[in-house]
Amino acid sequence: MRITLPNGVPAELAQPSVVDENTLGVVLFPDIMGLRPLFDDMCAQLAADHGWVVCAPEPFPGREELTVDERLGVMADFDDDELRATADYAADATGCRRVVATGFCMGGMLTFKAAASGRFDRAAGFYGMIRLPETWAGGRLQQPIEALASAERCPTLAIIGTADHFTPPQDVADAEALGVVVISYEGAEHGFVHDASRPTHRADDAADAWRQVVAFLEA
Image (cartoon, rainbow, N blue to C red; front, side, top):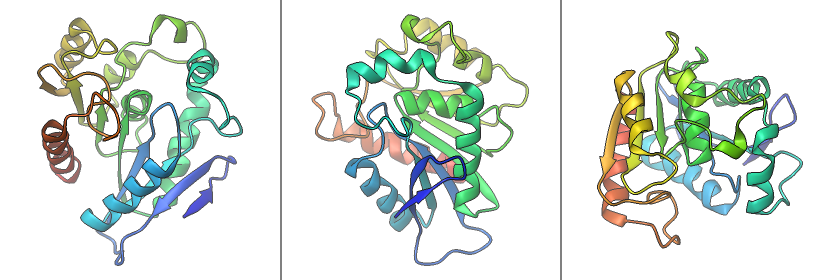
């Protein structure tokens, strides 16, 4: 169901049939195209399959009509303080004692940032940017690598495709040197897990990556 977070950001909230004090809360950061049926269905499926309470906030509140090119063009306007507030409100919306974070593409980058906020117990980003693309830098966005280097960072997993130009090998090596757990899929390109309609989707690797992420988040 759609909810509105206290800062006015729309979010999708999915709950399992039974919720108790041990239920895991999950904040799921969508890719750059934001909330849409793909993520509504993902939230519902994760809640049903794993018994999680899942909250997915809209990354472009009030600007949902933007095209992908327009979204890429306004990323430099994003503000870390606002993003952190949204992440915290989404965590609160789960109502769970223990909350973890995950996300895809741009949402994977937001996952890496959330890992250092002190709010999340664990974080697992799917092909999130470890360093900002050049056109996104220079504004109020901290470099994700700085969050990953923080002493406050929770245990963090990065799912990486070796053919993904958004996560070049040196960035991946730098993250791994900071203690991030990296699982790489040889020859996989950006977006190979979460959207089966993409030409880059790799069903077997996607299934394995999900197994790895579920085990990590539930540990």
